[in-house]
Image (cartoon, rainbow, N blue to C red; front, side):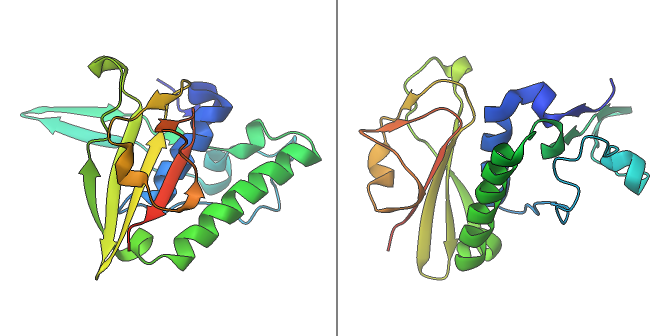
Length: 182
């Protein structure tokens, strides 16, 4: 299976949500180019420019090794026009600022939380977790799906949001919320 751009696989909203998860989750390093080529119609794929760029992963099960293709999240493929590019610029700027100002997101421990997402088990789209560094604790929830989700354990996020929002226990599609619990 050839590599597919994140947009083709997940759509605009999915790329937003996955990037929020990448910036908030533990043991992740967001990979952003410098931006001078952002929005260029004739820009070649990152693989063409950098040569081998291993985004795939291998899983070994006994003597069988399976390779799963990686996913490329290139904003160039869908951010056409000045306003769209500006929107993505602000989106990344906000995430980078949040990550730089909060050491929990770069150095903190990671623990999954149960959000109490109210939907069938096989339809769950919310990833909730906490990041702790020293005595400081942050909680994050990201809705990776196209539908709003009511969270039975929304009280976990009752603090003033540092990023995103949750209203009346509902997390909108492709959004996240980050709160400091101090």
